[in-house]
Image (cartoon, rainbow, N blue to C red; front, side, top):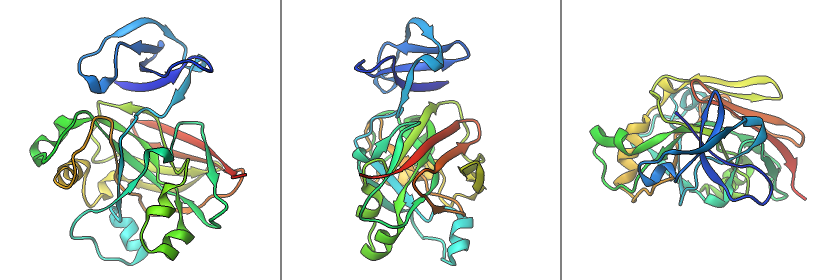
Length: 256
């Protein structure tokens, strides 16, 4: 099942919907609010504007969580997940522009599988982690690499507006443990890996993070990026493609 957020026209109120071969059909409520049903007729996909499919209170991201990326950097595997936060204000949706800030001279893409939380949860046992997951989507953890290296910690480098594209929809029926994941820059494959390279899989991450902080419905966990991150420039088109989910495509513009 593919869940979307969309508007039909400028000024319309965002709605949640179900995407099928017939198009997008509105839902009676948010998928995180419990049971829902479709409302009204379907609308062709090309007649709606897709938005970021989730509205989180926070984005919990994980650093150095792919074996191939750790090998690329010559770093030992972490003993525990390495966590940092991105603010909700960094979110942009499918087709949205990634803005290159004046503060940075080296902005990079990072293709990631994102987990979307279904319900408020705390101290989730590993065996029950799947129960609190609504589904999965594509995410680009855009990073000002020069600022990350300068600041040491990650807050500024990861938090600029538009630095967290997500979408195009949430796939609910998915085994996330062995999916092809790619980034594609101007039509050229740059990252090409699989989620079987994850050091900590989505279920382990949900359990671990929920022992640190309460997770709310709609919250996002960005599970880390594989080998092959690289630089973005004005005019680029960057896509994150994940098997059995879809492709998140964004354009790059210089701010100002």
